Image 1 (cartoon, rainbow, N blue to C red):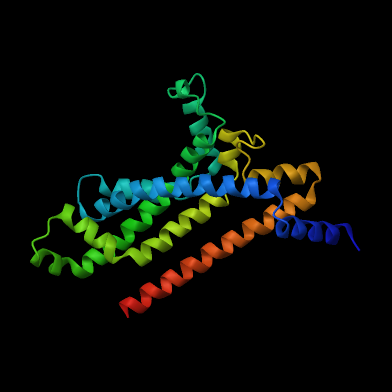
Image 2 (cartoon, rainbow, N blue to C red; image 1 turned 90 degrees about the vertical axis):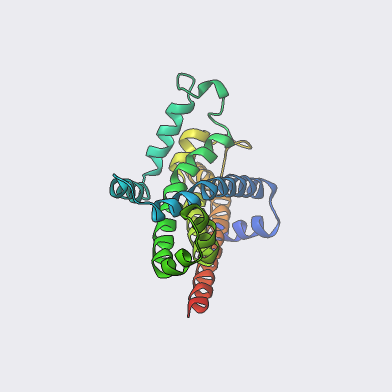
Length: 234
């Protein structure tokens, strides 16, 4: 049997045996990514909805910038957070660098533009469809926001899942601001890079399988949410 086959079998054994090192890394990864997505969603959903409803000078520029930030390179986000949180940075006094908190901040910066930009698109389309009905009910724009967000909840869940997929698969930013410290800031993506470089293929493969499974679940969830939304609208 080849070394690759042996490594794959060992990786499966680590997963099925609930290896504490492997699942400790997985647990931290989920905690960081879910926290980042929750914070980003709380900010981005109302921000995207407000941008969809209000017209103001420079709105087009704001939309272009927001769309551009959807493709923000993770290493740039990581470097920005590093400079902010380093000892010489404006937020250095809080001592967040090389902690899970710094990793959450970096992932929020990556995820927030995605959720905000896609939310704006969905709310703008929905508002155009129901504009007359909402006006006839005498709803002001601030009161329209929760109504429109709730009505597009299935589509927005897909948006949030897309944000989670981005956060959980990201490696550059978390390595810069987290430092890949064992038991403290080592998440799945950074651990895969490290263990592969060390030649520890079973653990790297095990983490890769779990990460692939999470990505598959996220995509399946997004697909089901999209189908539910289409059936509801149809």
